[in-house]
Length: 238
Image 1 (cartoon, rainbow, N blue to C red):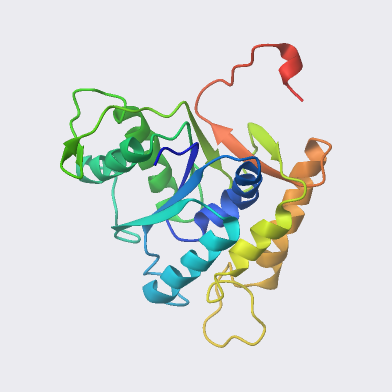
Image 2 (image 1 turned 135 degrees about the vertical axis):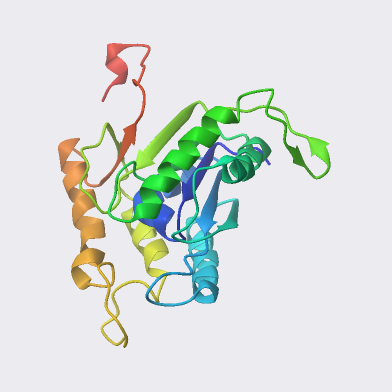
């Protein structure tokens, strides 16, 4: 299946938190979107790899993505090396996305920065014809996504572009809250984490409102890029 957008996250829930509303909007506009989680989130303080798997499935249904896969890399310990790059290259070539959305370049969790660089490198290498990969016993053709955008996570990084996601924030919040073991629940027992607080859950909307304010919209999601953004006309910029 060829995808318009492939959203990649180091952990299940990264994509929902970073670009869930953008995904929901593009799907509503008829785009085909898939999600790849690099790890199972097995080192998370709350929940287990098994609960995260089920939560990711439910969240994917809420977002109405075309597919969701997990590459099973080691949470906390995956690295940006040839072995991991080739596995990701195989996925990129399999789905041939025009756009890739991935982790923040710099963030609180070490996997986010590592995942960001791994995805960027794999997207570039995927376009090199002398790197050979196979899928289902057949040689894959080179494929390089046209755009790689990094969503914003824990740190308030200044965005290079903001997507107007007015009307889709509720879908994003529902998709995030499908991860019941991870986020705020006043009845939940056990250890608290930086993302299990009510303040963090509330930040999903107030950050979107603040980013929306910057572009004259109700809600927005921000992204950074690693290269210049080109437009055909100065009037293309809103």
